[in-house]
Amino acid sequence: MIEKQLTFKDDAWIKIKSGVAKLNRAVGTTLGPNGKTVILEDAHGRPHVTKDGITVAESITLSDPIENLAMNTVRQASKKTALRAGDGTTSSIVLSNAIISLTNRSEIANIHRFKNGMYDAKEYVVKALKKMSKKLSKTDLLAVASISANNDKKIGKLISEAYEKVGKDGVVAVEESYNEQSYVTIKEGTKIDRGWASHHLVTDINKREFVAQSPLIFVCSSEIQSAQQILPILQYCAENSKSIIIVADTSDEFLATMILNNNKGRFKACVVKPAGIGYKRDELLQDLASMTGSRLFSEAQGSDFGQITPEYLGSADKVVVSEGETVLFVEPKDQKIISELKQHLEEKIADEKEADNEWHLRDRLSKLTGGVATVHVGASTEVEMKEKIDRVDDAISATRAAMKMGVVPGGGTALLHIGRGIKSYVEQEKHQDWDDSYKKGWYCLCASTPSLLTTILSNTDMKEKAFEVVTKQVGAGDFKKGYNAVTNEVVDMFKEKILDPTAVTINVVENAVSVSCELITTDCVITNVRA
Image (cartoon, rainbow, N blue to C red; front, top):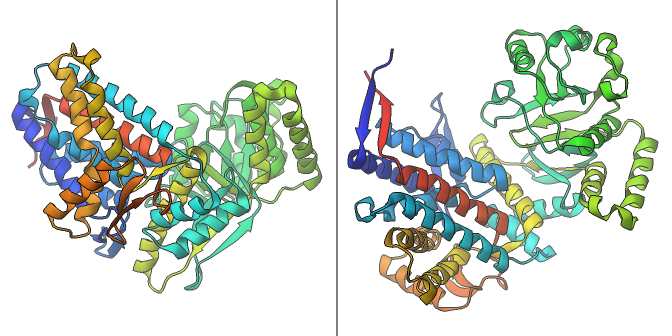
């Protein structure tokens, strides 16, 4: 049995703050247009140059076990930000560090009331961000894509072009180019709003993706309990050395069998849980079956596991399954069926009686019509290629988030201005009866809101006194005023197109507050004793 080391109260808290601060120092240097690159050494001693915050964070392991646990906790929260909104990992780490570093636990009488105050302040910030948000225009689309690619307008233009072609509900993917040129291609395809059922199924460990060329597709609305139920299909895959994507609810036993098969078998399999619930789930599965040329297996419609054959299988040109979604590059096998289905959905959307169901109908239509755009990234060297792909990935994710929920002033401006509002709100006469610990929770988040702007300023190598002046200048104006780190001017951020996706900023705040409060209320850390 492994011996454990117990660390309590202030001793633990000092190490927690130190671990988060070290993560912030490494990741924070990449933030903003003047952010610096970081050189990572992989397991084989090869270099990887990047400005991608989560790539930097993933590479870090600290020697002190408590510092490492704290760092890991914040890193996992920042990854949730990327998973939900597609970007914002660096900002999430910077804000988390600001909250934790500004918290003096010895001055807080009731830590749980402090936590309650922080959570209520978070709700105030989220409401303010939604109120501040504006819809994305065509020129905003290019700006968001460029900023998220570290102000690379060429990459921004490619991503903007890709989304203009496939629409806001379409899919944009990234691949390496076969030459030094970067370009966009459009193919027919669709997506499932669910990813792999287990990370043990992935074929690309670095990207955490299952990638398959010309895989077979099995779409099933019934739960698969064991491999024996679909044995004829699995045998067909093995005999023909074909990968398979199984879109179905499955038991843990079946999932474990597929993981074991991937490690030892003659073919690769990936399990993807279906999206949606009830009849909407069944309709999405039927649409997917129509796109891939497969037959939907449904016991409710008379299908029988005892009579299953390879005739139920469809196919795709390529499938990429990540943690959050599945992208299928597939040309519909029967264009007539798809055309009729599109027409049927358009008619139902136009029917006022279907108003309550409109979102679902539009979601189905988008998956049939959106297509898949691929940004092919070209570079001179492998090191440059990796760095460029990191930036393109970030930019695609941020652009997608902006198209869904709109944008707010970028460069940390939105949170800085909302922070001023928090202070005024707390000091209102009607809140005079709030207890001290609860107020301190509000004030702590308020004091943390300038951290994104100050980190961007510090990355410009500006002297500390100078960026204190800039912070005051920005805070003194209306909420549109912010700092342009490229021109070193205080400008109207909307006019200058320096924008952040609203969804990303909201997720940054929510995840930073959540993980910070968990660490702040920690009084004991239990670690393994190192040899």
